[in-house]
Length: 381
Image 1 (cartoon, rainbow, N blue to C red):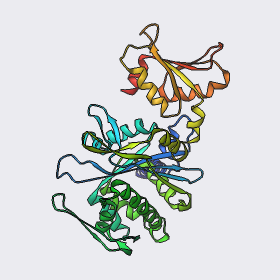
Image 2 (cartoon, one colour):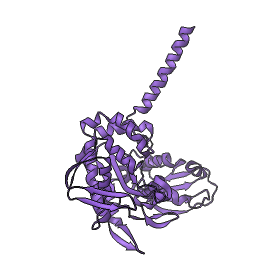
Image 3 (tube, helix red, strand yellow):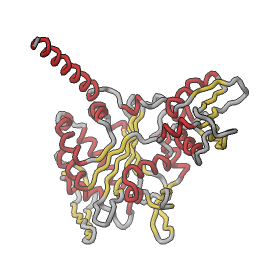
Image 4 (cartoon, rainbow, N blue to C red):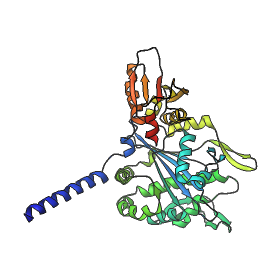
């Protein structure tokens, strides 16, 4: 009897181990499995924020990285911290202020709207965490073109780095990426950050670091705040191992500096930014979806719900052509209508994203129409 009980316990333990390994050592990112439009790209927001000496921390460094899992191409977009954006409840303000108002979650939300793209993951760390990560890597080798000197007693910032080839430890690396010269301001700093990212990636994918990735992960996990789930750690490690620096392209939000009401901002050039995002960040399914015009009708009576859904669909490339009220507000189920049989798969993709039911109507229409029902309210809640 005891032998049978022992075998049963062993069997249960093996099942638990099997499920655990399948969960942790999977090959696919959860956001890829959850995207109804078969995207091959993942977008990652990276934020470094300052100290809490003067109140809630602002974002000091803001970077968006987009990685194509098929081609291994990486697009890195640097966003100047003075970029002028619209922050709900706070009006026009610098993007770095969004972090002080609502943390990385609000910055993520603002950038999704500003850049018109979905952001899958975020990773943030403060200055101490950044220095700890660089030290755990054994420092970063970089060529400094000219001496960097700066003293800010009030902010506790002291920078003193010589020109030439340097191996920077964590504190020195922090000085390098934070330095902001009087002439070029944020722009010069972004250029140094671009240079530093390439040096950092070269270090990370070097053979000696690759072998240490599991132990380094343990050392750095306490230094960051992220929404990357445990089951996606294994795909990330595998992705880093296969990265090719020759496939990395970097850019900065195009625009110009401008003073408005006595404050300095970076004003983005919207048309240039759209082209840049199309080439650097957006995935192929986005381009495909941009052929569709979608009319959205409020069928549940909740104020602004049709516009909210329009904003969500636009992140996946759809063009919202019309927003209005439905004939009544009694729709329990969201209805997705399509009028061309070739659009069935796209309608199914939208249903996977927002729920509801699809309907084919044989009419001379080219749009997809959506009536937002009460089920969508429950879904977003």
